[in-house]
Image (tube, rainbow, N blue to C red):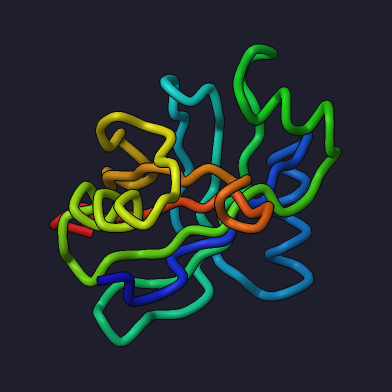
Length: 144
């Protein structure tokens, strides 16, 4: 079952400057930096709050590490801004959640979940099937 907004993904050109803006303007803390080679992004997860299921809600700032990444192409077309919304599971398997949603006619972009931020398992839903919103499903890592 989907239980929370895990994060809002925001694409940016300059990760360090954008992180500083969010920290200074809103008081968020940088919880986690990493490079995801598979997705071709460098990212920072800024913690907003803790949720009732022991997880947290974040703002995910992402910048491309290579020009052929999906985020680089998205930035070129759309500029900086909201890239996607991610819903977290209540601990249930993200593949099972995706399969259930797919049974309702929504296209899932990955055949199998991939590694996401902080060791999570993720998959994406096609924005054309989600009223124009790229949607991510997230199963947090057991130790997260």
